[in-house]
Structures are given as C-alpha cells and as structure tokens.
Length: 79
Length: 146
Image (cartoon, rainbow over all chains, first blue to last red; front, side, top):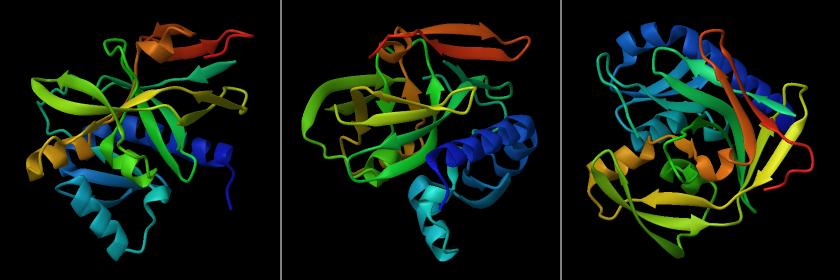
C-alpha cells in the first residue's frame, strides 16, 4: 500500500499532466466530469454522480483517481 | 517549509495536491487557491466520501449568483507535501456546501465544485506567486500554527 506522501506525489504528477494537456482535454471532454489516474483519463461522465457509477463499473476505487470538471472551451469559471 | 502550487494556465487555476482526512476516511484530491474566498470550502462530493456529518448549519454562501446552504466542520485535517517531500498537516475548520433542494442540477453543480483554500488558511502562510516563471509557493513560517 502506498504512503500518503507517495499518493500526494502521484496526485501532483497527475495535476501537472492535466495542466500541460488541459487544452486538448478540454476539446475532447468539454462539459464532462473526468477521472484521472496514471496521467490518463480513465472515465468520463456528464455528472459526478454518473462518474461514480462509471468508476464502479470499471472496478476503480474513487480513492485512486482525481476528479475534474472539464469546462467547455470559451467558458470561464469564476468562484 | 514550502508547498509547491501548480498553475494550470488554460483554466487559470492554482491547485495544490491534498489529502483530506476525517476521523474515518481519507480522500486524495486537490484544492484550489482562492484569495477571493474568506473561507476554506470542502466540496459535497468529497465530504460524502469522508462521511462528514451535516450538523452545524453555518449560513448561506453565495457563489456565482447561486446560493447554497453551508455547514461547518471542525475536525478535518488536510495533508500537503512540502517541496522537500515531507508531510505538512493542518487542521482547519471548513465549510461544506450542501444542496438546499433535491434538484438534480443543483446536486450535480455542487458535486463537481472544487475544494477551495480560502483566506482563513492563506493568512497563516507567506504566499509568493510568480506566474510568469511558474514559481508559486505557500511558505509556512517556523513556529506558526493554525
């Protein structure tokens, strides 16, 4: 089992990969919610709830992935 | 001790890899640095995974024109990794936004809302931000505790 620090390092690598590829990802998955693992999109769905179901189908644990909402191109999200 | 902040230039977001720890569960995720938010917010999606009880109502939070019911939770720890690869654990009160109705659209919106690191946390750190050179850090002062 991986340590917390190892998991944080993995998360960091996945976030850097996402930042470097977010333009392409946005084109392909705009409007979807995606799950990222090992620098790959392993599942996508229209909502967080549906994504959880998709992860279950693939037997992937929620704890193993980062979940990101992909805002469509041209849409800016302000909190 | 420094924490590296990741800059997503397409989204214009600043993110930090984080582990959220409740008394019963752990979630590996990330948190968005938001100097415009007075409070640190945990999203609904992660709060359910962490088995956080919705007991202490904490007023209405308005975000992007929508209003949400918030709950406060004082027993959450957030784990970060320092640039030296060491753990930094902080215990900080958070607010959790919960849907005020069973409308699917509202639940889905909150489900994918990111976790937010607000000023209540940031004021305890030195925040240096050089976006041009991608050198963004939170630096914890020695002997400074939240």
